Length: 150
Image 1: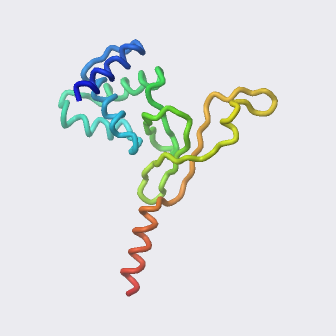
Image 2 (image 1 turned 90 degrees about the vertical axis):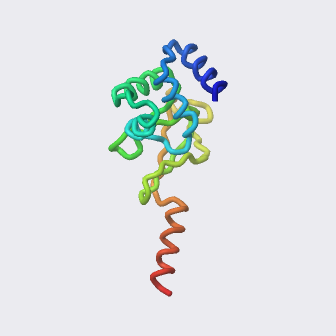
Image 3 (image 1 turned 120 degrees about the vertical axis):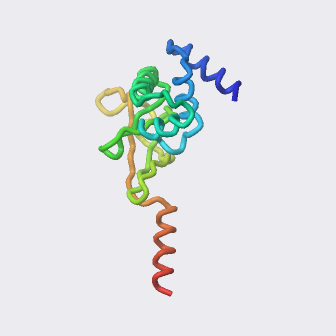
């Protein structure tokens, strides 16, 4: 863990962000939770257990600084909340309409290949969102139907 914190400290210093304990813990949380695409509230609630003095404002401001420096990405797939992603490489997301999870998916996007569209436009960001029901929820739904129809 010490080695991880040292490497996170180096990342923040390289980006010109003062590596406070709270910022390090937020970046550590993001680096260890790459699957759940958390909200500010999720991060706050989790870190509050370890840092009782942390504020929601600190989490917002820290994530804003991380976004500005490209350390995290922002996802607005639901339209009602901002989620954060430690994976800043171009990739697509799947939102399960049943359980609300956001899952990284591998999809070949023809527009991301050359980073140029017709008529010479330069592509700087690509956001691909898919919505449906994840395999875990489908399995649960199938099992519920079996249990109600013996």
